Amino acid sequence: MKIKIVLFIFISFLINFLEFNNEHRSLSFSSVHAQEENAKRKTKKTGSMSEKVAKKLGVAQELIEQEKLDEGLIELQSILAFKKLSPYERGQVNYFLAYLRYLKEDYKGAIVYYQKVVDDENVPDGLVSASRFTIAQLYFQLEDWTNAIRAVDSILSNDSAPRPDLYILKGSALYQQKKYKEMIPIVEKAITLSEERNSFRLEQLQKNVTTAASENRVKYDKDNFDYIVLANQVRNKLKTDLASIRKSSDKYPVIEDAIRGLETDAKNLAIGPTKEQWWLLLRAAYFELEEMDKVKEVLERLVVEWSKKEYWTQLSAFYGQDRQEESQMAAYQTAYHEGFLEKSSEFVQMAQLYLSVEVPYEAAKLLQKAMDEDKLDKEVKNWKLLSQSWFLAQYDDNAILALREAAKLSDDGELDIRLARSLSNIADFKGCVDSAKVAIKKGDLKRLDDSYITLGMCQFETAMYDDSKASFASAKIDADARNEIALNECAASEGMNRETLTVTLETQKAFKDMGKEIEGKIISCLTPATVKTVQNWQKFLDKEVERVTLLQNQMKNIEEQLRSGESQALSF
Image: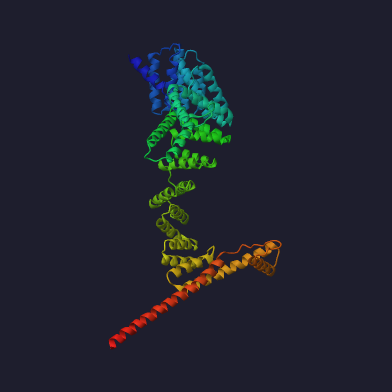
């Protein structure tokens, strides 16, 4: 009984001790179990172990678990010194020695001992199978890609139902050798094997997708398509249909249910025995081969089962390159709703995508929320974008608040003059005057003449007539200067001196006024429109001031007459 307990402890330990991790870089105590389970079906008989050997192996196990590797090695070597040691017992010790070498990071030494296990005909098939797989893993860790591939091929040639991760191991080695075209079908084989083992479930899900595609008249290449991609295409069409009908329509909930069903089917199609790292291998290979459509397809698969910021943002970028604006926005929007966006620049990107598909209100809401939560950098460009979004959404008051913050932070007067015009649009003329003055004081304005015109107009609306006249006089100085520059440039481009150009333009105008046909080339010079604007305003202002002055004088006379009448009445 005691022997059986020791043997059970030892074998349980032994069949749980190697596994290739996701990055194919470490070994642990779990993978041999799967190898052993598969091998148990084979016919080779398992040998027996004496109580003496079992006890020694138990001691060695305890020492190794306590990380006393040198002492464990001594125990194992003492077993090999036994005069009567069966081939089966020797195979078990070699297997244990191989693992000990691995723990000591002597991978080449470990391979030697695992190879002894493989070569020993008396060792159970389970240990042989596990040893073959571990040899392949160790070659991978040694970056001996050629021998790693050779070791995997050796396993595949002897296994009628190979593990999918064998193909992944081989594919990883091929990737390291930069044999990307050879690697892709190997990794796809692993994926296919895994998915075939869930064939009934997959068939039903695939049928759901193709049926939905037919019912909604979504065309696809029946000889070459991906079910998840097709499911997404049908879902996108249904979303478009949904946006075009009223919520009160009977069709609305039906389409909503269909969309949810497709999303569930797409997710379930992706969920299965395949691993995230397998798809990442494919993505990397396609990227190296610059097959970006394939990279996009892999990303479309990744986001369904492994929803991560990296995948959604990359997928959005690919949609952007392909000018699929709505899909680009939808992918980035998913990252936003999943809570993946953290950086200020990411919120700006999301807002710009909303603006690109003409949804300014959503852009404004997002930016305002991020600004209020201190997730958006409070700098000029972000306040400007927020203001622009609110303006486009026709929320002028909110836009002006944001623009005012941007103007405070700006060193030049451009944003202040923009603020002045916005205030003028909502009839806040006093605010317009104040902002326009600040703008002109700050300077560095693109158009000083326009700025003075804005100031003059708002001063006029607040009955500051003298100030308004002064502003338009200043506007005229800058407008005339710009007009001179424009005429000189026009003369140069026409190969004339300035005097000749002036005569020619005046002649053309006279002919036009008389209705006569102009002979020769018609010359047209692009001059600032502000020259005419200032002239018109100055004329209007003079007349308006004259009219207002007249009215004021009339009112004054009437008041004096009324006072005089009251005085006479009192005297009488």
